[in-house]
Image 1 (cartoon, rainbow, N blue to C red):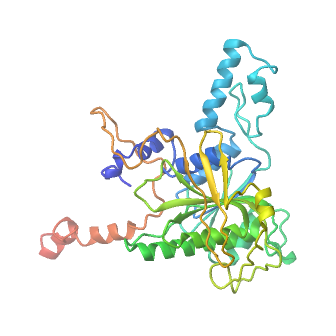
Image 2 (image 1 turned 90 degrees about the horizontal axis):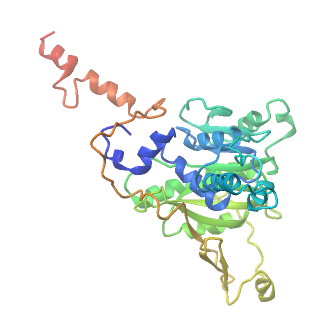
Length: 393
């Protein structure tokens, strides 16, 4: 994404460079964290399809450095100001927030509080520039050997491959992220299919390294059969949501599945020859009785819960025993009054175009540019190559 791109008018693209993020996708993860408190009690994370590293950069600054962003940073600032102005102690509101503050959040006095024992592994086929505290691996998430390399990177001193680690699905990884997407072709059905296969690859890897109660976040393209993916994810996770961050363009099919409460189904055995999405038979949870549904809050097949911001979330429970589809609750993340990712905003005349925070390490168009230069430009009429062919040089 160069300076001459029309995306320079995108507010989040410019904000990412102004705030030092490698890509605008960093705001997507921050807004998902605001909504779901994604980093609560998280110290071991695997970031799949990580390049250029914006999500790994968020993990490094939040978990390792202990920084706060977005709504959490604003609330902590309000607490500090109230404490200075009104002199509130532990008996006041500021004290209550201070006592209940999570490890890794910014201290009420502005001091950074990094978490202890943080392990973060980033995996991608493309090389990625180094980030503080991040272990980077160049590998293919669809290859079975990548799982062993991830486990070895998480525990280089204690990992013993002979003991079969990574096959039981109970290894201590708190969170698995996947922001990977294929090079879109414009054929929506094909793009949605390829993206779903990428999601299944990330899911099969996560099933082998997530600990019970772990979390899984992955990009998904919302197509006509996406509810089947939601239903399969619900077999492994207690809570499944479809999240659309404010920084994600509304004109895009892109969304994110946020899965919490990992639990391996009883009787299900991971088979590398038949992974989930490619032949594996996932046991369907038994149909609950009407009394059990009412106990969980379902009335007439619906359960309504009100969030802290006043939004009512409706969950549907199908009465059809043969129905394998399920619609995940849709949640819009981030401040809805913030910048619109689809809109273009007026740029001041005295603006300065900033360079990218991290230039591409191995751009896919690099070879194409080299061949174009050798051939003398786009149409072969300029440059050294054209002059040599004409006998000028």
